[in-house]
Length: 295
Ligand SMILES: [Fe+2]
Ligand SMILES: [Fe+2]
Image 1 (cartoon, rainbow, N blue to C red):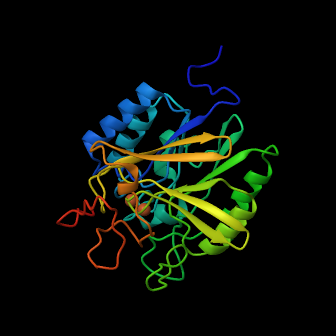
Image 2: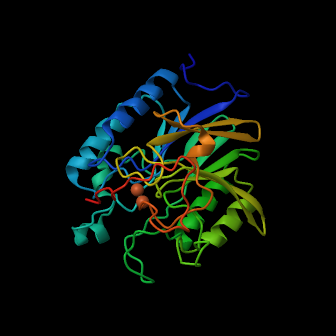
């Protein structure tokens, strides 16, 4: 018997794209609402693009695990820079994913829906010899090779979404600052594979942009946060509908702000509220007057 949320082969596919819940500093009202939406609307899958926790503490993982296990739909979870041990360096280097043990089958899981696959791409690293701190993204050659191998193994004609934590923008527009190492080449290679879109998080504001690469365009869809660490928009998640070769994105939020007012037009460095005049701010302009706590 078909499960209630089993998509018909030719019908639209609906995903909920959540990110940056940051258990430890989650917005309880926002996550209750998101969970109720998932229970009521039963999307075909939920993709959570990283930063489940604040500092990868055990109680934060326990809360995240309980919440995710309560979702009765297929889930994939990417690993964010906040999800690997920060204070325990031994664990950080030798067992960085250990604290995910209760949901390890969901971590960087490839999801297969009829005609559509969600393929993970790892952008979070234990250390970066190029710089410190290590909170920004890095697509290592190994990570890219794994993602490409997964894409190449799919049946021909499969529509592909790639799920990562960090946006793949390599350089910040205003000053060329290095953001995601190896992002430019990764975008080009993914565009060459005709990937429909890259889903990401990390910056706590939503966006829906198309990058032009030498191999063609690449859609980049960012989800906001469901935590109290807001940047310039209220807590939100993306509802993504795939119909044929079209993708529609709605940045859903409790404040009923229309999607265009929720989306920023450039990718900033991180999730800190914009304090300089040349930093991107979503049209809704919900910048917190005081920086949210970081611990
Ligand atoms: Fe985050
Ligand atoms: Fe992050």
